[in-house]
Image 1 (cartoon, each protein chain N blue to C red):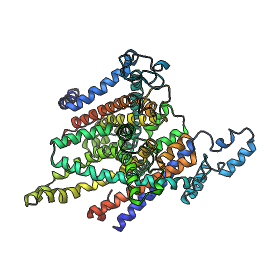
Image 2 (tube, helix red, strand yellow):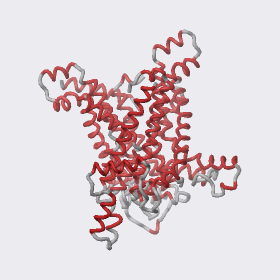
Image 3 (spheres, rainbow over the protein chains, first blue to last red):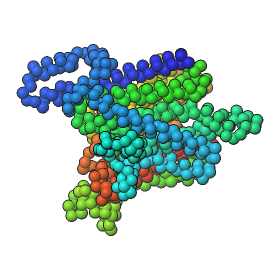
Length: 326
Length: 284
């Protein structure tokens, strides 16, 4: 178990270094210097002053020195200050991060709770009406643009039926509510965003769960389990599902980047002030320090998600703990 | 040799045409192609023609899918928008397939440290939220159709690289490869003439499914105003135009979204059908 953990942590670290190199590289793809924004717009800034600024930011140093300096700052969670409002990037992000994490965790839970039973039932009843309906749902789900679905749901539940609020994650008067009222308020605000965020993953995971279960159910040990008279329930849930679960958890871990990326869309549509919306606003205003900060932190979140997925399948399957395997 | 090849193709076609959903997918894909190709003939109006007399009119006989916030005909804009979807889909996937094949082939053929380094790179790319990566690059360059295609291409090759690597790992152990090597074939010849042609069938499937993904990504970008820029009509940007008036002008959001859904569905069904026909053993 410990060597497995060590190996995964090593991979985590390598990925982290790789991500910072790529992010740093993208930052330097930018035509011109970051200082241009502060200088070329301002005719009173002389070439001399521009050189001084470049020195101040270390832009006169060779690339690897700049990278080392940047990593040192990033390691101390210093992403600089926003071009837009002069706030530190870390402050802006930590204000917005909790709601994004909450929505994504809820979405992941929802995906797991809905997609897994659908997949298992489809696999144990292949070509039944349920299975066929699930397949149609999967294909339509894969093809549905989430931003469009979000708009349609918003118009249906928010405007036509008037059941759900359509923007933000809490009401303006949330301060005066009791805890129970507050919980209800959050639920009604988050219902649509969480559903939209989970939607794409639902289709993918239920399809995947079905395929994995079908694969496992054909194995000899399942036939053996049936032959020795175990009930179908025990065969399906104890013998088959536990074995199918491992690759399913991996896929769930791999879907985290997609979920976090999707935050941009649903947070923008539902006016939720999370990391996704912050990122979108920073892109529109070309606020490079914030863009880089969110990209790095978003990726770190993803890596942590993958690490957790790795660890949880070590829990689900004891043999994984013994091998270091890929 | 030629006879053998035709017979595998015939087998493939025999399996493929039995699959009705795959045929339906193929027909959808074909129709969108025809619509895009014949856009100047099919489109009833100039897609850029602004008419203040017809702002936000619902579906009528003159404008079957209504008009937008500038009085332009939605049907005409959707017909021209199909060109953008196809162009972005194919060029972006072309780029991603090219990168994926190169990286996957080198990793699978040479193995060893090249394989370790390249696959670690794939893992790293997979752990960055793709949509963040795309938006970050778009923020640095001009958001126009060419940059969109390039950015989607260079952020979506990882799946193909893994596929091709896997194929190479299996194929390079085969007897005919040992024979080719014994005859003195050089690495480049081995990779591109002996192994790659036999490694391509899952890549075709992945390419067809990739077009669907690229169309969805482009429409999301255009919806956010960071994709194809106005006045060029794209399905995603038509929906953006209808976002603020969705309560009174539902047709502006509904129809372009359906166009995206149906087109993407077509590519996905076609891709699945190809997969089943190319690998009949995979199907239960």
